Length: 293
Image 1 (tube, rainbow, N blue to C red):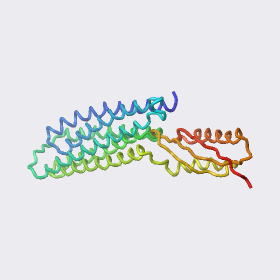
Image 2 (image 1 turned 90 degrees about the vertical axis):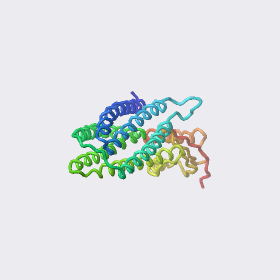
Image 3 (image 1 turned 45 degrees about the vertical axis):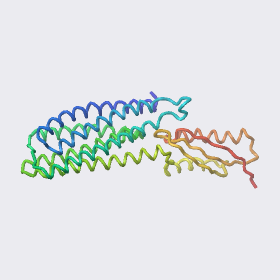
Image 4 (image 1 turned 30 degrees about the vertical axis):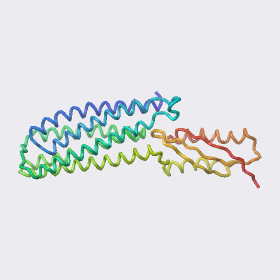
């Protein structure tokens, strides 16, 4: 299996695990949250619903992005990852506002909170499941540089933190500190909103053809400098294609070289860049002659 196929297959597995894992957590958190009227647990259950939506979007986005390039999409379908990541971020932001409003209003009404040992049990189960999913997706996101998996990984990590806060609120309620339950619901919603904004900005940058980062650009220049035949370079451009980039630039070589010799230099450099820099999807080099004095 090629690295590209491995990448899409791993994303598919991660999204399916996310769907089934979060569906299980949604059911148990929803039941316990509404039975105990815990704002923190209800907010956490809404978060699980959002996680299911995110995993479905990951599955669909990955399926589209895995399609090879065709006559209508010459650079492939890689940007589908970022379109669906943006959809995930928008839904996260919307839900965070709804949860914050509900938790905030609960501060001004008499609490109907009922402590149950199941609140603590569900929190422990949630943290355990989410920690496993986080470690798995974090490993995949680092290996394949996939924004969809990275977004899911961050979401699993955030869930561990917010559920830990829910656990604290459940423990404090034993001593009669019910106010903290509503505050945790508000904290969870703010956390979701901040994460949504970060994912939105990252997706937006790629969809708006943000240039390649300076570190990767320097890797390219380092390879170019190894070729002493290249006297000058300009017109460096880059375009994101999914999680990788297409780059193009102009090199200047000795005008006394034959057309075959000068283009052979460019061909070797193109192959070298694409072989040694995984972030580069395609390299296009234009060759100009230069008078050597």
